[in-house]
Image 1 (cartoon, helix red, strand yellow):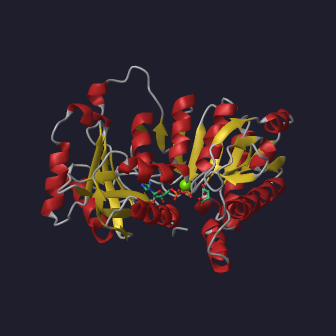
Image 2 (cartoon, rainbow, N blue to C red; image 1 turned 60 degrees about the vertical axis):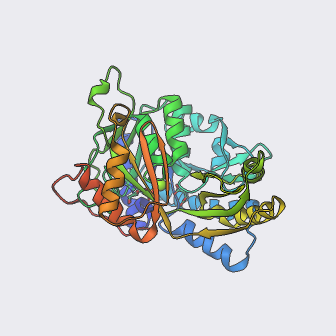
Length: 414
Ligand code: ADP
Ligand code: ASP
Ligand code: MG
């Protein structure tokens, strides 16, 4: 299984380079299934087109629109493969039998059939699958949420019991921080599913969260690597018998600028109020992340939480309505925030990580707005303008700098 992200298929030359690598893999005696993302900025451009004609974005039509991006890539890659003598066939998510629930624009995979895929492989063909999409139990076309091609690849790898799921992207692996922000970041040779889950869960976009969940649940080894240098990258898998003593205390610093903060003021402090706020958000499939509630004073409290910027419109409508119903003082929101997280399995046995993190941020005059922790993670919300400073200073303070700057090409992002 090989998955190529948007930058890896951004133009005709890149598509030809990918075709060469697929051909090389096939000629070494492997059955190859390829999952492709939309070319370069295509998905963003399609979303911007939608914004220009509508402010409502009906989910079904958004999915019809967005799935076209991946169809372009799959067809072009098959043509490039035919040109170099590789028998390849393209298939949409629906054609390979990726069955999802009915939640448009962020559907979850409920079943992978894969019959047509197996049949084509049986005929010696390479199959190129359009990532990020499926067909719902209501027979409608759906998409799996941004970055969802990773999930397509891992789900198919699990269904086919593939030896490995290679995620080809524009960096040479998973690093101790985003190399675009911290050039001194170090490449991690190996990560456990647990650590990668935390990193993806707090918003490191190198792998989509759902894809890592799938990989862990079905024990699919992931190899994150570069389609620009083709060098060996980072393995994400569970290695039997590995000692916990060797777990690094901190494996990475992760930033996420994709969320906004909502605050509801002067919320009456009585049982049922939180449920009244968060139930309708959950019913509308808004993914609420961090939640902070202050101690109440004189019967009122403030509640703040973060939601993806993409869900902000829906969230704001709901929260404005509910805050009136429950008699709260008002609602504000702040889009200029970033979440910074420290992740490491060794934190379980090392006290004081959070305190050190707060001290480092204080010394750099970065104010902390929210805090949350798990056994192997500490996250804070800070002002967006302080994001890069916070990531770099934490990376240095926790001894993660590699001593040399990232050297592979860093293509401009979609
Ligand atoms: P693709 O289009 O190939 O799916 P993505 O943009 O989804 O690529 O993911 C790759 C990007 O993830 C890199 O270009 C890098 O900027 C970013 N990134 C964030 N955190 C990390 C990290 N810890 N290690 C590597 N890359 C990271
Ligand atoms: N093209 C989709 C996106 O940009 C899916 C993906 O690239 O994984 O989010
Ligand atoms: Mg991606």
